[in-house]
Length: 220
Figure 1 (spheres, rainbow, N blue to C red):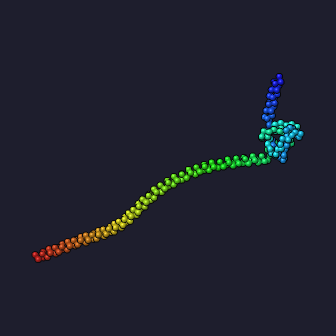
Figure 2: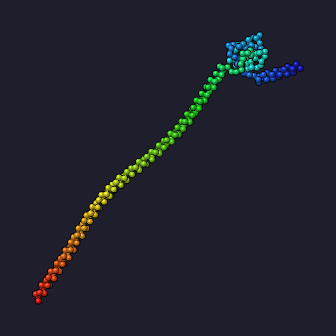
Figure 3: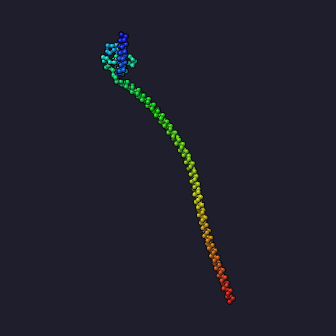
C-alpha cells in the first residue's frame, strides 16, 4: 500500500512539474549589478551564486515574492521577484538587432551577388547581340560599298556616253550643215545649168530662124 501511494505521489509530482514547465516564462535580471541566487524563496536561504544584469532566466514558479528559476546551465534556484523583468533588456535587444543586421547584410550581399550575376548574364547577351548586329552591318556596308563602286562605274560610263553622244550630235549637225550647203549649191548649179541650156537652146533657135529668113530673101 505504501509503495502504491509513493508511486501515485511520484506521478503527481511529475505531472505538476511538467505542467509548471509548460507554463515556464523567460525573464531577465533587471539593471542591477548583482542578484542573489538562493536555494529557497526567502532571504534566509543560502546563496548559491550571484547573477549579473541581463542574465536570462526561465521562470518555473512563484512563492512569497520570489521566483523559482532555471539558468541556461540547467541549475535551479530562487530570486527576488522585484528585480526580474520579462521584457528583453537593451543589451539583448541590441545584440539581437546586431545579429539581425548581420543576417540582413549577408542576405543583401547574396542578393547583390545574384543580381550582379543576372546583370552580367544580361550584359553578355546584349554584347553578343551587338556583336551580331555589328557583323550584319559590316556585311551590309561591304555590299553597299561594292554596289557603290558599280554605280560609280555606271555613272562614269554614262558620262562618257553623254560626252560621246554630244560629240556625235555636233558632228552630225556639222555634217548636216555641210550636206545642206552642198545640196543648195547643187541645186543652184543645176538651176544655172538648166537656164544655160534653155538660153543656149533659145540662141540656137534664134540663129536657125535668122538663117532661114536670109535664105528666103536670096531666092526671091
